[in-house]
Image (cartoon, rainbow, N blue to C red; front, side, top):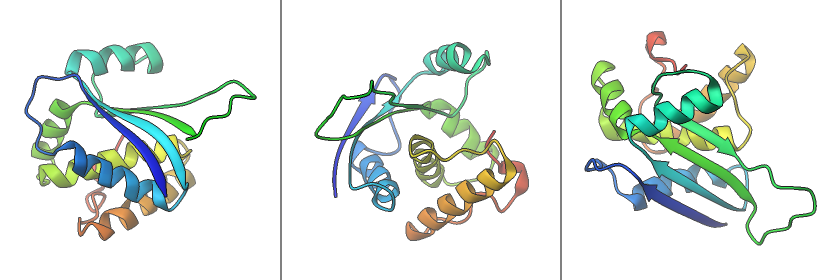
Amino acid sequence: MNYKITIQTACPDKLPVNGKIIKNWVKLTLEEHIKRSELTVRLVTMDEITNLNRTYRGQNKPTNVLAFPSHLPNGVVLNYPLLGDVVICPAILEQEATAQYKPLTDHWAHIVIHGVLHLLGFDHIERHDEERMQATEIELLTKLKITNPYQDEDNELE
């Protein structure tokens, strides 16, 4: 398995996890689905995530994570298949973890995994897709000894 994972930090906040831990969560998620890939995890401010959410989803509010799959033109061949970018807002993760009484690091792991699964084609628009995605998240989180984040139905991601 060979992955190129870039962590970009565009927020001034001190992060509760370091880049190496984030990369390990990304690798764990990718290992079941793809042998080689390249992706970026970008950590951003509330303003940046709000702007991206407004521009790409038409929602003028902050969100915890956005995923931007790569769409390369036909015929472009790379040494590492470019999956895309996962954009995470640490300030939102902190708010959510507090509101949901979850350990902050556990919530980080969940959201990183969630974002990478989106790059792999998972979604939660239809109920059966949501169930498949949640089951995959729970399976991966269990490997990290993190409890099911969906035990309380009110905690489901949007």
